[in-house]
Length: 264
Image (tube, rainbow, N blue to C red; front, side, top):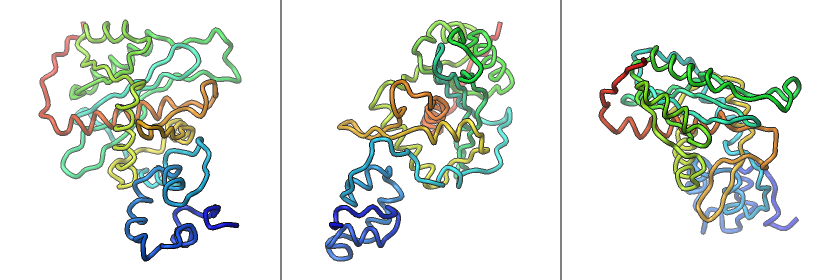
């Protein structure tokens, strides 16, 4: 095996040494230690270890999400962002809550609700109950008066967003189809996971969707995508989480606004 073909553990310094003849001299070990904590696995393997990698490598390093699991108690006193990623039939519709960070406290993450087609039970006529989705958002905002934003991917949900906004829900558009926006958001969330600056309750659906997410790395930058267009492996909860956390971090830098609540 040639030095550039090493396929060892990308987190192991011994692998770094084998893949880099100048390691410890031309290549600084401390630089590698910092990079492996901050760089998606596929990018680290390609750029640091000269490895050919599959484009379908998972986004988060193994065990990093599990390391952030803890007690999550989101209360009506918390400043909250809701992240919403909606679908019509084939994909999922998901609402995720994230608390606006206060001081050095971690962002708390909680999956509020998911509507996901059961491939073993639901037929081709299955559709998301739009009225139920709207009512779930409305009920949550009523029960949590300090919700700052409901950040929604607008695709196919403009009518619902307008209806909720007319009832006093603080709706903002967050198009997850914008590559540049998602590159920055994914980088921010990735760093927070690695630094344990967020905590989640171990929800199985959210964990599964994160495990399904793979990295697309192009000239714009790395971001999460489905492994293929028609895959049954959904990532919508992961997208909603990224939306919620990204907006929570941004909102934490801004003074809270008084949001009118009508709910008529």
